[in-house]
Length: 91
Figure 1: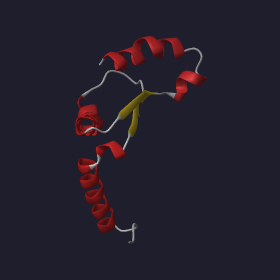
Figure 2: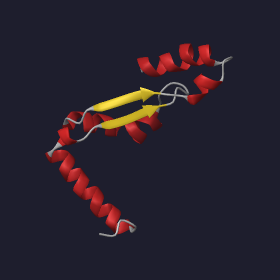
Figure 3: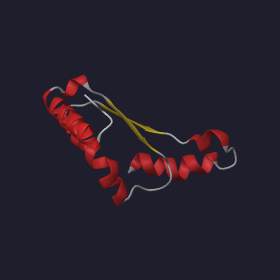
Figure 4: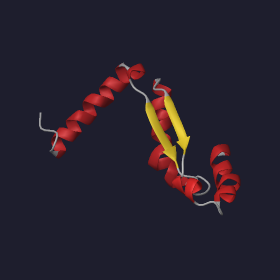
């Protein structure tokens, strides 16, 4: 199968979706968010709905909050943790 075409990608997506519904335990999802502020409606439509959908199917979901800036920016790291990361965790 040629995976380089749009049609082939659609076919693969259909097969994966079918297998996800039939065998959700075969899959795991690793996803994450950057602590850039409170969650908003774009997060809902962009990723949260799909995370919940997969979780409800029985797919184990692992969510991380990661931001490389926290490791490299020593001056703003405490502010990022207390204001942005905490808001994201509690959302």
